[in-house]
Length: 299
Image (cartoon, rainbow, N blue to C red):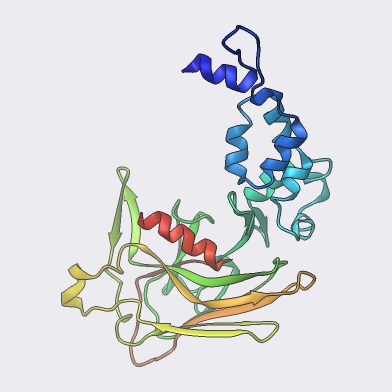
């Protein structure tokens, strides 16, 4: 089996003992034309076959097709010395690792399979009512967040979180969502545990999620974060895990514009207190990319 694969990739032998054509004989330019239609992981795997494939897998023409159309705008978010003189392959690698901006409180990255642009905004980049008062809020370090910390609400009456992001996005349909967690989690002896001591009030009235774009696209959704009464807590699937709450979709059609998106989540009914909630981030991700990842997780 190994000998057959070697013959195929580097040039094999026919029954008369004469060497015959193999994959290694395909011109590098022809291989590059095929690679344009493959995903970056597929290209990297095939690059291990032979010299021609390795050469094609480093071609600027191949990786130019994998980069988002506005990748120069994304590079402009970095200092020039970080990307000057880089090949298109290394530029793709740089963007796929994510770009941190706004003192590390916002991240932009390119999906490693599709080359689509994704954005995440940390709780630190948002305006949160009462965040400076330790009686209400605290910051929890955690590996569960790409920002390494989340905002934890112990108890408050007026709950409001607002944010804004203005970044270059290529034409696409995007979904904006909040990443939230009911309960205060921690790790003990390497095991993750969750404390629901302060978790209350989220089943009484829904939280209102909302966003507005600079070209007047608008979406609103409402959801009770905790659907059960205290005596039904054991059956509550919303507690103790991270949940993405989708607010809605917006469309970017102009590759030249830089859209601004203002978003918020509120529960300002002051007839009851609420608490025991972790706020991690807001994400803006191409809608069908999010759906594909959900299918992979469910399978």
